[in-house]
Length: 465
Image (cartoon, helix red, strand yellow):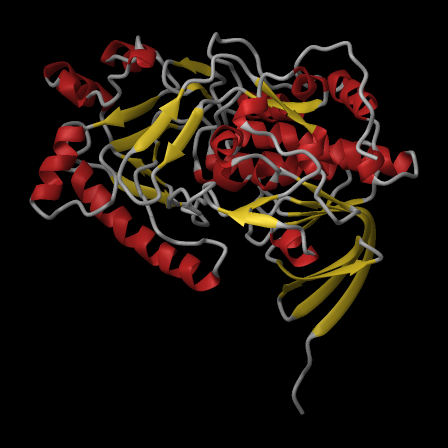
């Protein structure tokens, strides 16, 4: 007699699907506000790309002013306390970089969820969504031969690819506007055994290998790298070209990139580049992972030919492929480049982005970066999907055009968006209303009370009724 799959049914006020930055902060915010909350993560770690050692962008604006607060800042404060981050560092290219320890991110994320009363369900994948009378009522997840039916009043899609919103029938687009080309994916990894002093000496002798020469990057020098504990190196363009000509470097990227982590003994390598895949498709995602693993060995061998990196060894490979772009969902508001500086954008903003427009070519080997001088607001309507109630979008699923997305997709901004989503969900429950009818100014006041940084405005605006 064969066994059958087990089925469980659970009840919550708020269910967050996806445990990356946009889900982590959403769950903590909802739990702290008194909502019975569960967060479901398909891997064995919360934190998304931060759990790979990738430094977090978006905490400071281009002038070095604080752009994020609330749970986003608390996460870093707690990491600093245990040696999991050295804090925020201004950067001429990225505006700021906040190095983190991948493993301490995992631990602190769980601690913060537990303290907020949030239940965590690891190693479970979204399987199905039940929509009744135009609202999401339940989501079925699967793991270890068990289907768990999660009934909740509000669901938050923080899956990155928007799997929940997709199953619920929310309209969406793929990739870049006009072309549907998606930014490439990266399999992050960390290395040890490097000697940055020797590497910086090499750069002194070969200044052409400092890869960012654009006018906006004034101050991005070898001296800057030496003096800045948290930094990102981009360059070795000639070395990459030489290795490619010899057939030793097939990664479709024209430069080498590393990012500091919380420990000076480890560097996060952001050089893998998997192009021309739709990571929302399981077969293409799997093929992308295969490519990523092959690229890692190639990148390590390349590094060993560079002074200061001769003895590097892999210390950790990310638990998942880092996805920059897949689906873009349609919300009650769609933030576009033309509306970034509109008064209405600031007046309805529940989060803000301080990162630059950073588009990695999905077909070539370069990056197109445009400076964002001042943070821009993200209106609440970008989190409210069209046509479906009982659901909020968080992280990179929000409703923005593909150019705005190239700024708002980074982890710091996603943490701020997540806190707004979780707070809104709890507020709707408290007021016994739909998330679509949340009073935006009341939500903004709650977010500010919790330490979040928002665009300044004194104009009250109606909700998205």
